[in-house]
Image 1 (tube, rainbow, N blue to C red):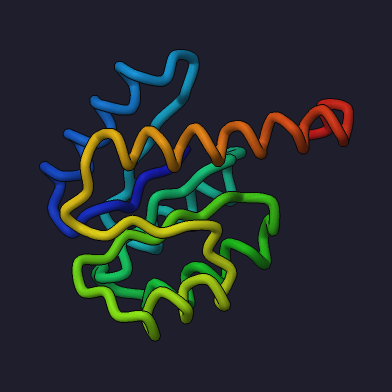
Image 2: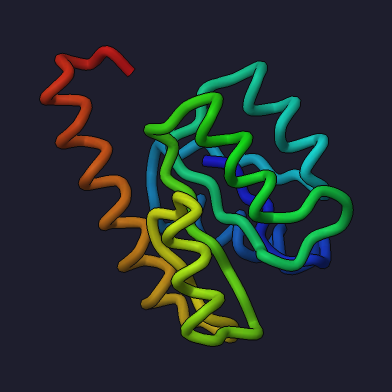
Length: 131
């Protein structure tokens, strides 16, 4: 899993630590901007990306499009602190698999990740472990 969540390094690290403690056997990496995240995605395999809508450099929706062009099976969970119905719909229509509203609780992040991991596991079984 790759976290591009939060526009501050501290938020990314706290989220990374929390996920590592609560989801065994989950490899977590963070990236401080879209260029670094895209480089990592090109070099390694990721199944879930937590993506803050507000991020330095590349627009989050352009990043989302590029990731889905590379691998449409990657689950992208958009994170936003400024949510309107239009913004949420834009995220989903752009290919986001889910979204989190800031501030979010640990229960919310767990539920969303469990749902994504469950779906990935079903796909892995359906495709006989081909990814």
